[in-house]
Amino acid sequence: MSLEMNHVYYTYQEGSPAESHALQDICLNINEGEFLGIVGHTGSGKSTLIQHLNGLLKPSKGEVLIDDIDINRKDAKAQRKERRMRVGLVFQYPEYQLFEETVELDIGFGPRSMGLSEAEVTSRVQEAMALMQLDYNALRKQSPFDLSGGQKRKVAIAGVLAMKPKYLVLDEPTAGLDPMGREEFLELLGQLHQQGMTIIMVSHSMDDMARYAQRMIVMDHGKIQLEGTPREIFAQPVKLRELGLDVPTLTKLLLELKQRGLDVRTDLFEPQAVKAEIMRALKAGKEQVTC
Ligand SMILES: Nc1ncnc2c1ncn2[C@@H]1O[C@H](COP(=O)(O)OP(=O)(O)OP(=O)(O)O)[C@@H](O)[C@H]1O
Ligand SMILES: [Mg+2]
Image 1 (cartoon, rainbow, N blue to C red):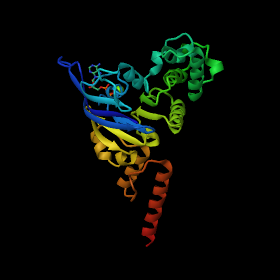
Image 2: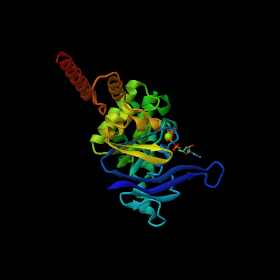
Image 3: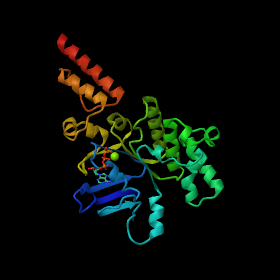
Image 4: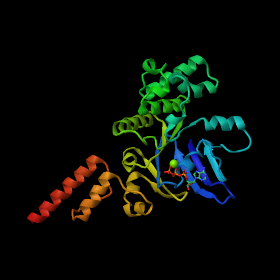
């Protein structure tokens, strides 16, 4: 079971002077249970790519499969619809899409439009709010517009989770949150992943990627330029810089120390590993001096 893109091309405004080849020959397989990070400089095609994963955009060429079914095929409409609903897509600044009078109605909108019973809708709203650590009794009757920015975002994401997607796709979900809100939100995503949800996250933060992604893709001009584990990706700082990107903060520190003459590895980014490596290098350096 997986999300699959096979030789996908996408062109905006084909044939017009403003034509833009936003995706070019994308081949990607996302396995169930994975945490995939998508990075790339602005305009590299990240948002365009993820909008193909639930059929919001249709490839100009190539195919997108959700659990082995081509979601843009002409026949089997009901099956295609069911497959698309397995993918929950959270746009950047999803709180702008809140529109109902109360939090409860907003989160219940998706499940209700799926034709579920009121009892099932309520239970889904409660479950989704619990996942997002929102207090059901305290917030259900409140207007979503009276909440804080961070709470609004959680409500918007709860609305997607209430559809019980198997794959959760998020476009820069921490953009605009303060450091605390950001940390709390990423922890929540980590928990959802540990509970078995497949997560696909677009982010400009290499630190977030280093902490959460199991695998990453790096995009540039509509193509996947690099693919691998965070360790494999962050071991290529020169290539990343060519692509307009950086390495995580602690990797940068190691590179800086190396430049200043300390013989350290530079392919690490976890705080404990970096600390241990610096201690090791300092100790080895001292031993050399005493010899
Ligand atoms: N509606 C549109 N019409 C025409 N061109 C578009 C449209 N949306 C995006 N593009 C172009 O497609 C390319 C990819 O855009 P996309 O939004 O996917 O990039 P991105 O990697 O998500 O960028 P960002 O990091 O800024 O969000 C860009 O060159 C962009 O100008
Ligand atoms: Mg984008």
